[in-house]
Length: 189
Image (cartoon, rainbow, N blue to C red):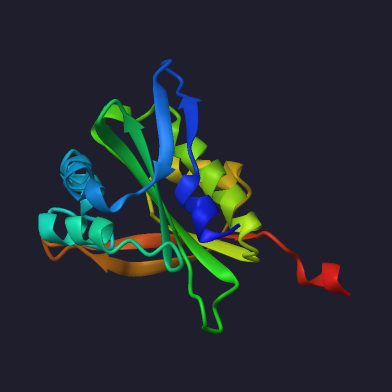
């Protein structure tokens, strides 16, 4: 799948509550909307994200400097509001070029409505089209809904990193590492 095809991707999905949501790539003009979505995420959920999403300039810069070769960001939009962000991080030109990392953040408005699973399935399909062989996801221990979603998608928990995330309040959190093999090496034999 080429970057032009990625840029043109659009899909309308229906969530459990009947909401119609447009899935599309993050665009350079989406920074403010993305920052607003991240601001709606609860403090307990934000504390275990890799970046300080309360830093509006940082979030806006992600949109302004979008590079789908490194990070493909799929946003969910209702009307003119971004309600979720799911990213596929890649490592082109490295020994990890065959591995991608998935991160998903659902804004307050759409929590618990199945949107995260829909976005996860879209990123899995995209990863296969891009030729990735393995995917990983890091989920805070105790996030049972997220852990169950990755397991339902075929991921297996491979490790737990103790005290891996350090939040702004200087508290440490354990993280479960999930992997999904998209292409078994033995198939090439």
